[in-house]
Image 1: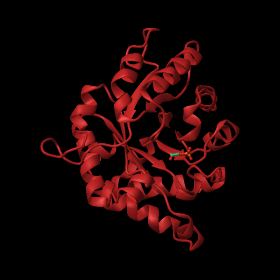
Image 2: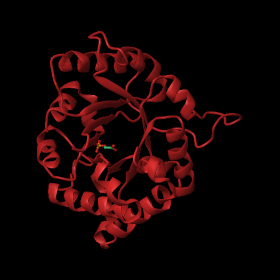
Image 3: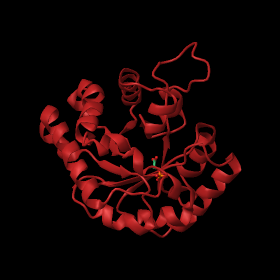
Length: 255
Ligand code: PGA
């Protein structure tokens, strides 16, 4: 069976003390839980050190929550003011790094070539990239969603070796569903997830069956169970709802 993952993308929200409080609440709510999924939180980079201290060997003696980052530099190290390298993230015990979120593609003009380098830096450092794909509203309205998502995958992931592809996680996040309250239906999600798996299989063969594909975009306690019931939906990348320990816990318990 493929591994299931629920990852919280906090985006640019919370101060450090608020973030610590959120993790404390989450650890408390999860202390007796036996979730079937891996749980990941991706706080802002300023929070990684304190949050990592709380989660990596948490005070219940287990690593219930894994640490993820929201981005990393495409460069290895050196004179790149303001950047955070993959090695730095690894040194803080990050296990996951979100790459190519639509907000980064749009507001920070991250393009395929740079995303390929970012994915490569993450893999070189033994972490798991969560590579985001997804179409915009006008692309879906023009029936271009499959072409757009296939292009995003081919331009970046097709450049990986099979051994690296095997270690990668994909998140399908239709841009029109992110932060809008408008979720893809579970059938729309399943269709796209199955399509993504096929595109991966076209290049990499059977290992596509092992790749977790997460859904993201207004996933919340009220729709998570229905989305996660679909055969190719292996969990979620959760924005807004991950800022509430109780909502996030309910989503974790939705398999
Ligand atoms: P949302 O964000 O859950 O707030 O829609 C998801 C994401 O952007 O990862």
